[in-house]
Amino acid sequence: MKIKKTSIKSHIKKGDIVIAVAGEDKGKTGKVLQVEAAAGRALVEGLNFVKKHLRKSQDNPQGGIVEKEAPINVSNLALHEAGTGRGKKKAG
Image (cartoon, rainbow, N blue to C red; front, top):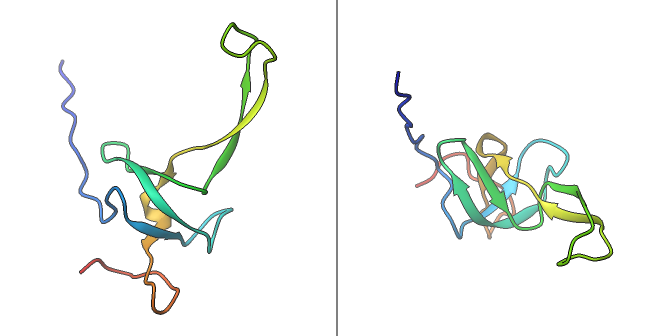
């Protein structure tokens, strides 16, 4: 049986300035770097940092722990209004 991938329409687009309306980063703003429409998630600059443990390798001889951004659910994001400093409920 073949599974059909369907893309979910999102109010968030690449390059938009968004504000987090829920979660650990509530109130923080950032620029959208990437949108994963099928998963319903977006990668936002400066939001949802996770710690990634790296094994020693030729590229990274020291190994260690690196903080990087992880995708956040688009339902936790709203478009940022520059004038009011708050999020828009609907696009348009």
